Image 1: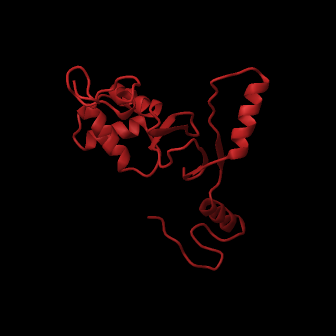
Image 2: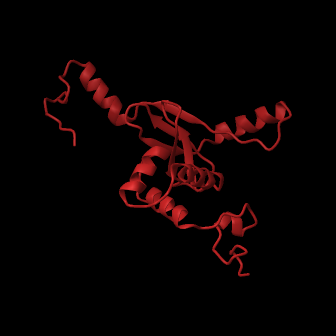
Length: 171
C-alpha cells in the first residue's frame, strides 16, 4: 500500500496520511473543497449545498455537513457562528492559531493573532487545573466601511449619499 493511501489504494487527506483519522479523498470531498476555494466569505452548509447543486455536483446535505466538519477538524477551514448561531465555514487563510474580528452588518471577517489572549487563556486554564486546552475568540463589531456608512447616515446625510454629497450605489 503506498504511503498516503487507504487500504483500497485511494488517497488520504494530509492529516490521515500523517497518522490522523483516515479520510478518503472522494469526489464529494474534492467538490466541497474546490467550492470553498472559490469563496472569499464564510458560508453556511446550506449555502454551500445550494452552490454545489447549482454546479451539478451530486452531494447530500448530510454529506456536506460531514465533510465540512472533517475539514474543520483537520484545521483546513475556519468555523464560526453567525448572528443566528448557525455554523459558517471558510477556507483558512492563516495556518497558525488565530481569532476573528467579525462585522455584524456585512459579515466581513478579519483573521488576527492575539498573543495576550493566548497568554491569558493558558494562565487561566493552568490556574484551574485544565490541560489540553483549546479556545476560540470571535470579536463582533462594525467594520470600517459599515462604521463610515452608519456615521454618514447618522449625521443627517440621506441614505445613499456621502457627507460630501456624492451619491453612492449598491452593486
